[in-house]
Image (cartoon, rainbow, N blue to C red):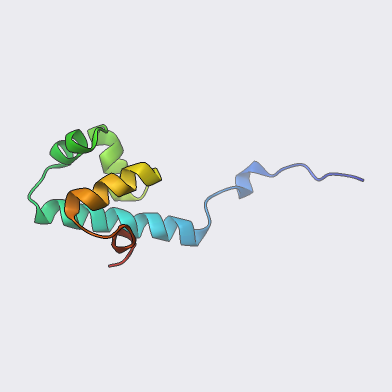
Length: 85
């Protein structure tokens, strides 16, 4: 049996995952602005860095389930609502 070498350049995130992260980021940003919070204030309240908060809002980072639950509780929304416009 011959195994093909792994092509690492093809391991990028599927489009649907990238779109989901962007959608999540926009929703978090919208909720944050509605509460008139800065990224720094929200990050502090969630126990993360402001840079990481910015990456989440840009769709560049995948937050843990624990962090998503904190965000949903903070804004009083259901977890699944973070993924819908």
